[in-house]
Amino acid sequence: MLAAYWPTKRTQMRAFRFLYLLLLTFCIHAFSLKAAEPLVYGQSFELYSKHFEAPRRYAVSLPERYYLDERQYPTLYVVDADFQFHHVANVVRHLARMGKLPPMIVVGVANQGNADYLMSTTWTVKDSEEFDSTVFGGVDTFNRFLYRELVPQIDKTYRTNNKKALAGYSLGGLFVLQSYLDKDSPFNAFLAMSPSVWYDNYSLVEKYKQNLATKYFNAPLFVSLANEKGMGVTELVEVLEGAEETISNWQFKQYPNESHYTTALPALYDGLQFLAPDYFVGMGKLMAQTDYMSALDLFEANKSSWTSFHFGWLQSYTFAKYVFASKQTESIDAILAAIKQRFPDSHTQVTIDLALGFNRKGQPEEAKKRLLTVASQAAHLPHWHYQMSLAELALGNEQKAKLSHSQAMAFAKAAKLESWEIWEMEPNKFLGAGE
Image (tube, rainbow, N blue to C red; front, side):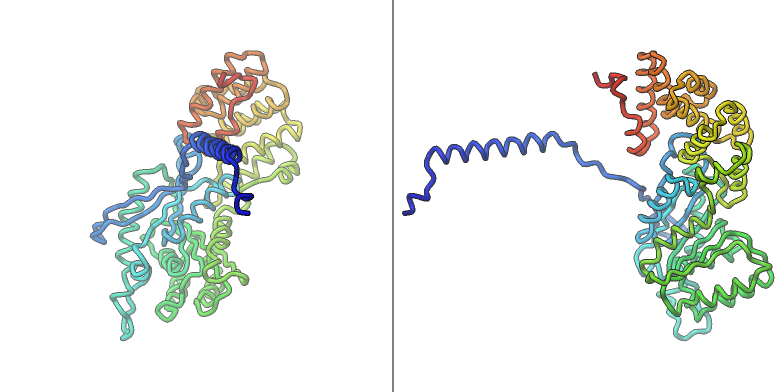
């Protein structure tokens, strides 16, 4: 009976051939795969601190188009970077990509473990028998490191402007609130998320009351609270609400459906929006304007915000769409002149996107004409070369189109553009790239 179930020699050979072909197919597929590439959102560094007499870690995330030009950027410092840096860096990048926030350099200020976090964010409590100086009370040393060593190091290494924001959560939020009152603080915008105002028997509430009674504060301050009690935030907000004459640029938001741990991400998102309210102007609002001058007035209004205003790629693209949709193309030269006068740093970007509009409308000669007006400023910009390649192709200049496209791809890689931007400029089949 067992012999009836034993495979014949022919069946064995068939099984062997099948397994051999299966293994060969797997090996071919495996060797054809590219090696995995890490997706990098930031880098980690060490800086020796003379104040701590030890190296201190920090992380940096640069804006997506940082290597494209010489523009200077706002900086956002976040405390407790080992826990906070990942989501903060990526939320900032997302909001900037979508045009809701100007691109920012994110600096994660790492604490060397929980013991260091407790020590570095708290002050010495005087006249208290229960105070343990081995656990709490090292904020002055942390301040000196941050103010005198790390911030100058970042300013020296990267293209920063004078806009510096500080963000922190829990005890990090407590640290932010301390820095807000500190006359020596290098920061001029503050995000305190679920801050631990309970520390030192809520003494910070009284300190705010005293300061707001005699001084005027105009730096943006965002304070949040989750579904939690005993944090001292409610008492602090009462003080802020009662000081209308000395503090006005602040916002409080509570998240009743979030815990102390889950509130960090939504609070950060809203805090960043508080720093740049109505930063992005959509098509609906643009189309409601009488003409391009009134549309530009909307962007002009954002110059007075903490972040100031710059035409990012999506805002520039949307504005170009508005110009075509509102049938103002006959005024494009006047529009570009107004952009150059009112937003000189954005003139080249808007010109490229208006050329994009002409290319899509089947008017390559108009696209090329506008691109040539900024040729000297845009010689290193991949998007300029890409639009020029499309214009030349439509005009029948295939060799020029190929050359412009190859330059676009080379400059895109040199500028370390994100993959989504590079893929949008991948070779058009009509260019014959790769043949």
